Length: 143
Image (cartoon, rainbow, N blue to C red):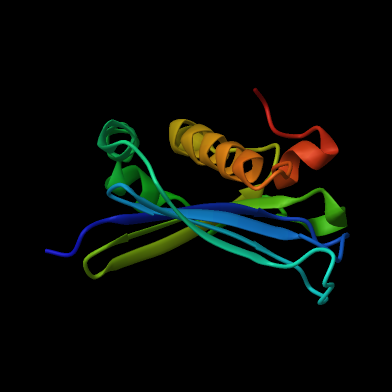
């Protein structure tokens, strides 16, 4: 069986630079990406590969209930309408692939533990690159 992969991120359509940020994790491998809608040499896109402790991966997997995740609608609320920001979680496990998008400050209760781990990974990866995680730019990511 293929190894599960969990991807989560944030999008802010009102800004042009660094408006999409995501982390993907599978086992101990983490991919951190920051992309902009416009090219700017002073703000290059980031594609960074990192390693995390296996215990983090195990904890993240324990937070996931695939049945509850499958029962959620693909879009909850109005993600990024009126430029309030959007977040998403994608889970890939063998043939199972599903994405749920939601308003940045309206995390579905079923996803709260997963989203908190993803946000933490985004903060850590951003700090390693000397940056601030996307939601923190607007004071939206909880500590």
